[in-house]
Image (cartoon, rainbow, N blue to C red; front, side, top):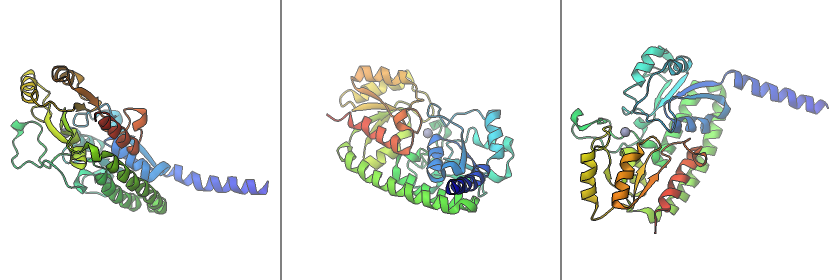
Amino acid sequence: MKNRLLVTLITLLTIQPMTAQALEVFACEPEWAALVNALAGDTAQITVATTAFQDAHRLQARPSLIAKARSAQLLICTGAELEVGWLPLLLRRAGNPAIQPGTDGYFLTAELVRRLEIPTRIDRAEGDVHPQGNPHVHLNPHNITRIAGKLSERLQLLDPANGASYQQRTEQFLDRWNTAIDDWETRAVNLAGLRLVAYHRSFSYLADWLDLQIVATLESKPGIPPSGAHLAKLLEQLSANPPAAIIRAPYDNEKPSAWLEARLNVDGVLLPYTVGSEEQASDLFGLFDVTLDRLESLQP
Ligand SMILES: [Zn+2]
């Protein structure tokens, strides 16, 4: 009886301060919320600005989000101009000095990795060109490894009282993550060279990692919806040597894909792109598991 009381007391003492002082985190995209969750668990209280069904290029800085940003202690976003259309406004409206650019509470993931598709020439007539390169960095799991290490350091800096817990969780996560990467890479050997058409350049890092070939995009220019003329041109270009499939994210318009799939007689494949669009992709491990399952299903 005494022991049970003691256990209850210890439980109360250890749990209460953590819930009372949960680190408030504002994440722009679900993949970064998932990463914070993996490294911080209950120690962080996370708000996510977008869901897996929303295009993070385009978002309204709505009042409920601004309110969340006002009290956040850490903001984690992709950067590389992915959120350029709404994040600066949201930060200004929130007026929270703790998460402004340049502070410890401001953490951009894309800046930590080698970026693909950095344009040699900046011309806005070429569409939503990202001068800092392709921001969709999370679909190479090695980028996640690197970002996890840096994020863990930042969490420990902002919340030293829970430093040991972040450290331990990070080690556990990375152990599991590195094992998973080995498994994925073993599985994906047969996918090398797989020819795909994508809607937007959302999967460039996945392609770079697995040696897939994205031979065309349905958008003629990034951020410009596929036009009939461009689709007709793609049909002509790809007819002689059709891709294995047309891949798209949950928020991409299905119609242009369906049009081209029917005419080329190829599969359309919905990839989860990020965490949360389907039950099996409810965390970062599931995201890659499902993505590989879908791509493997295209193999003869
Ligand atoms: Zn983009």
